[in-house]
Length: 354
Ligand SMILES: *Cc1c(COP(=O)(O)O)cnc(C)c1O
Image (cartoon, rainbow, N blue to C red; front, side, top):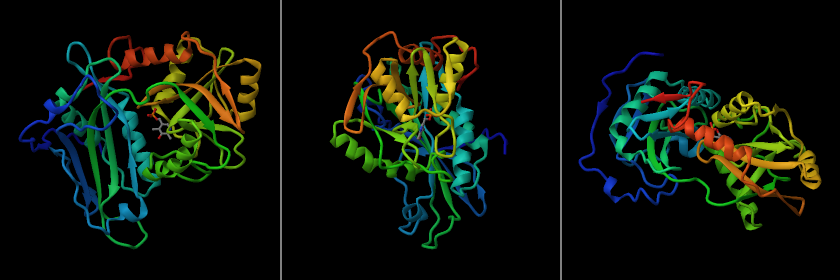
């Protein structure tokens, strides 16, 4: 599983598309770097990855990804510091989680070296695509899908692991107003909510469209049983500050084990910010909003790092959060991004040089 691969085959793009990219005005994940890593599973094993120009993938219409949604993905970022060094943030965690997700979707485990060394080789080749402007980074999308054919509802016999990268700016712009969900669920006990499975996101789009039509940008997911507990904020983990205590729900088979979430918990503990990992009821949050003890709410995930919430809607009433710049959100976001971009000390050893 940990074999070293030092001779990844590389087919270079004949010309680069980089001059067509406006690095000062990047959106999120909409332009793609010159190369991608591709690795095939067939005949019962993963074959050595190779790097090739970014290009379409050709699949048979009966490929199982189209019919049974057997797919998982990851989201990561690469940063470049002032000395042109390239950094990743806890990449081994993404590799581990990809295999946790795969396991749940009956996708064969990918050797760690194919992920880590494949990614490093790809980043070295497309190093010039890593933005340096504050708030920008190279978003990395590793994913696996069932490329094997057949209408039989069973796991495919062939898969593709691909890594594409996209120079990206900020994920959200402006304040995020959220709606606490009372009808729909993103996950259930015994389900796939803890996995980064493609279908989890497809299932979120419709309830999110409904929330958007009502003037909210995101949905706060609650438990599938009684919609009594706060679980996640869109595709992010959620943190709630009541008085000076930062609270987040425990991970479970319904809640994704976010790397940003666990980093925030460790960082807050190291900085003596009181943190509680426990279930949070909707009632507790509404009461705290009413009596003025609700100080902050924010989402946490790789794409936005920390995304402050300006207010929430629940049962037809809107609640505003206090406007304040001296927040845990701002403080923790700066600490994490300073670690990620090699601007600050990294006492945890999270930063990995490429
Ligand atoms: C990816 C994701 C997160 C955040 O995980 P990170 O590792 O911090 O990027 C949280 N919730 C869901 C549902 C996700 O898909």
